[in-house]
Length: 366
Image (tube, rainbow, N blue to C red; front, side):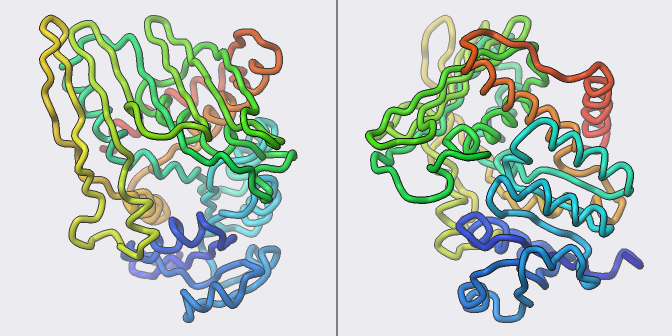
């Protein structure tokens, strides 16, 4: 970038559901970002939606001189090689979840970003969902007292196994690789690093080849975090539950942004991010039920934060250290499920110190 008034030119690699519904509209809604290139084999589909962009092969994106920021939303096992090429080419990089398919791959990208002096971050857009914003607000209010239990669900009803890479065995496939990073990041964002993990996974659907049920517990000193995902859950219990020493809180109903973006409603439009389902506070002594409206949500703030970080105005909205911690927890959860035992989080002391420092800088920048 030559100066702060120049547009940050963005290339998006991948134009499947995530690239089309989330990344492209969110990028285009942020002042100072310009989506100029899409790396995809689906040229006609891209140009039908984005006639002004240049479409090329994903492998060509890193070498382009008209790109400042590369966003990777391609299949999970391609994240590492595409990000490594972009970092070596001097680009800032955003990687959709999961960051990579192994902790070793994540560590190698962290090293590359530091060696080449480039910005690298994970697309944890769900931090700007209504239920996570509301969870953070009620925790920080002190209304629940000391938190003892946090439970978060991402359950869906998809009984039929589909023919797609996410449901075929291979690196980065399965439900927990898909939804686990969101749930893990919520826990790290709200509560910090756990000291251990115990997990269980299952294939519950007829014809299933990859996990479609996951139940993961993160253990803190005086807190237990339950993260759950299933493809055989219809109807609705609460998505988020928090218990504390003085009260409990629950949130029903999903954040509305994905549905809005899929319908072409963009950030800044009237009603964007409005969630009609309030949080519910249950007073501990009486059980009295009190409804609390949830904050308006806006996932485009992630990309506004990326823009500000590239312009050296603020730290990245998702510290790279959080991406590393999330991958360590994700990998440990799979190891725990296979070994059927509780396992510690395999971060080095240096990595833990770096995470603590990044968290301190985030607090200062708010």
